[in-house]
Image (cartoon, rainbow, N blue to C red; front, side, top):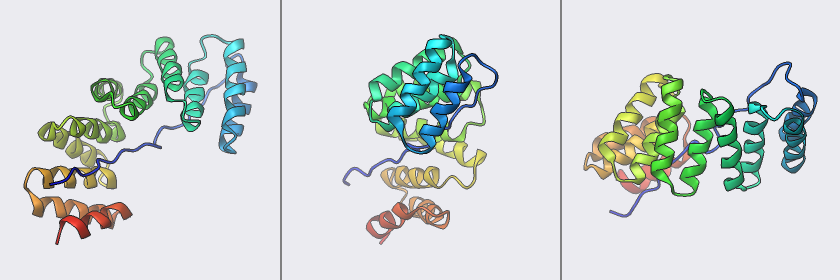
Length: 202
């Protein structure tokens, strides 16, 4: 069987808001620029906020998001890491750094970051889904299945978890179970799962 692509929540990083921190005016301008997809300007404003407040974890985190949009992944990782240094309980920063590590095919590093995000935030369903994806890339299908199961338990409408679990079941010679998961993913609105059904569930 040819390799089937495992899918990620690549755009599921979320903005973090900040209140009453020095540099808040520049931070808010950065958020506005980001919202309007002016990512280069967003980076500049978040940088100005950081220059005023060197311990501004949220500004580092959001600058990392903007750099991701500019495909500057290595620099984004540096920003997420700085946010974590300032706030070691920053689950979203671990999560987004994990996504970037997957982009760089550092799957074990990604697993470590998703695991830390889950330790901080046990109901982080997206982290379970993407940790499962990283484990699938390492062909650790049995363990990845456990992550998809947990993601679905937390969020029964997680179409990507159903889709990825379906792919893993097909890899594991459970075609019927895999196709049921793919059908559920389609019911939840995933269009890619429909293509997989046509190819693997004849």
